[in-house]
Image (cartoon, rainbow, N blue to C red):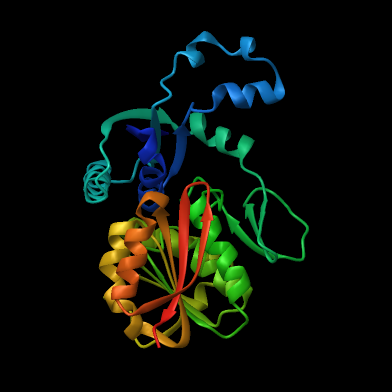
Amino acid sequence: MEWTDIQTTVPARFAGTAEDIATGISGGGLYIEDYRDLEAQVEAIAHVDLIEQELLEKPRDEVTIHLYLAPDENAAEVVELLKDRLARAEVPYRMVCAGVKQEDWESGWKAYYHALEIGERIAVVPSWESYETDRAVITLDPGMAFGTGTHETTALCLETLDGLIRGGERVLDVGTGSGILAIAALKLGAAKAEGVDIDPMCVRTAGENAARNGVQKDFTVLIGDLSDKASGQYDVICANIVANAILHLAPAVPALLAENGTFIASGIIDTRKDEVLDGLAKAGLAVRAVREKNGWAAIVCEKAR
């Protein structure tokens, strides 16, 4: 079965943002070519002289993201959406498309993706792996969409939810992507969750992942532009998106937060953290905590008193 491989190459400093954008769009799977720390990784297990010359010659100042689409996906539509989101995030890129057989990349995922424990109560587990644990298990297939929890922005959100959800909450996940954050909240005890995304493919994938985890009755996924589909007030609002989108969303957040509600803003590269902090304050949000990991930040807020 022939899939489409959309290859997006970006300067290394934009790799995280581009990966977030691609994974939020993906209806198939992702593969990241990143050789920046190749020698360090190899030296940890062998010797640098054992690296193939072809790998040593790979560029270290850029990263290539392969986004795989199933034969029934509209590749032209996805390419345009990807280009639009990259442009909005001001990410320079080169893009090409190629055909690839499903088995050429699917087996690679399974070789490197294993169960991952996050925080005190969460375990993200691939669908083909059994995992005995007392934690709240989120079952995902990385071939379906972003949501393994390995990326810093997602991990920061999951760790925050782990310490925040106590039971009975109403949750809104803006830019839901694979739905991992809303699913995690429900698994931790939230009563209801809504996911909003402008991409119909993400909405479909989030719904599939909800069913995979048995929370579909409590998870509503809607196509919409940020918060325009939200209704009423929420105890927790998550937005694991990019800085520009968070700044655009922020003015609408206070009205959507319930009394003592929490807004988690993530996907923020550290060089834009202060700009986002300023924008959140101007929107009437008080910062409760800033969590950082490997150059990324998640900002935890409440309504200013």
